[in-house]
Length: 84
Image (cartoon, rainbow, N blue to C red; front, side):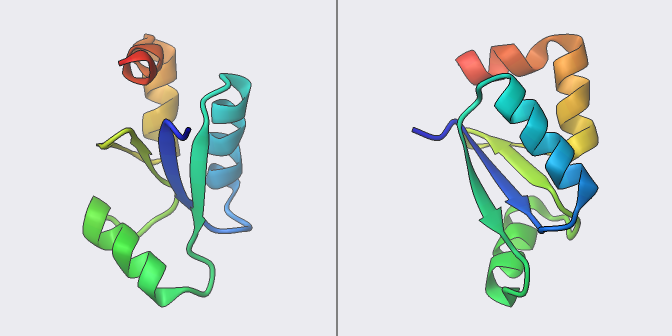
């Protein structure tokens, strides 16, 4: 069961960093690669209002990109979101 959804591209260092954090914290996620798939990128942009990757959701809540994920981790809010 996925707790999170991450839209990514293959060579994005921020995507790698975000996935590493999720793996380190044992947070299950579904990865949606938008590499070369215009329809998936449009879906990501429609859902998030942003065009950069990664775009991350915890459940139905859009939390933003890698920096946003790291901020949630530093403040302890990531664990709260995941356990909700």
